[in-house]
Length: 311
Image (tube, rainbow, N blue to C red; front, side):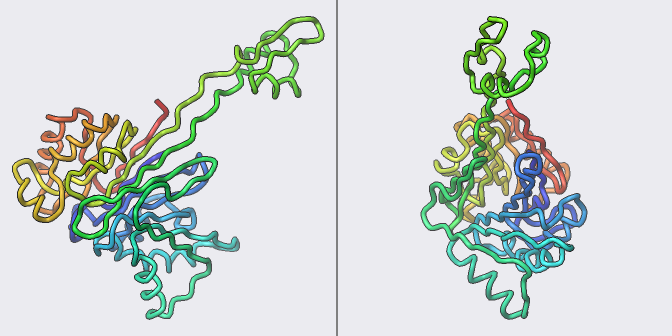
């Protein structure tokens, strides 16, 4: 599981930062990529990575401001040419009410025909919006002037692995018995030995939690979504001392993002949606400001990849 930041800027593209888009790579887990927001130029950013558009199975839109959705019609159109000889799978797009009309209107007016179906899931109030055997996704509304959502992706716990080498060292032959031991059963062997399966199964690994927030003022829902997350992605549009401006424009400062991470007891804070006014040195200052409140905070840059290991 990895996060790759395709765009870390705010409002408009800049030479050093494109507008918002984040890829959650779940290739080892489910052979898929989930995209969070799709600002203008996202497909051009993808060309500079190893991401294959046909691997993108879900797109989660936080809100309908242009710097988060203007790249979406182009990406879904180009995805039609990525299938090769294999049929493309359905694409699911989650987002606030209006996302379906936006995409469908752009495709209709441009005469675009897709080689695969799109399923739209429009969110109104939040709560659990997706669940399968591997992941559950929750959404809650944030505070951005227009409807804006944050997302919490929760991986299921991984059962402990059967310690095969230990069994072989005891001359326990492979076969159906291994399946019973994996379930934790107690088995009596032909030679009379009694084997407790729980002694040969590793510890359960707790599933990872990734929280990706949309644009927002500091709000309690951000804390709820980020509770004990392995990674919390939070906007940091303004620097310390710009609280009045941040509030006026429905955004957050570096300090406010760090306060959310601290209150949520998150493990890592990744700062994004950086205003173009902050160049390299100023962006580093945002990072230092956040670290005054939450030590494990870091400002993201375009194309940075973050590995999310098991605890």
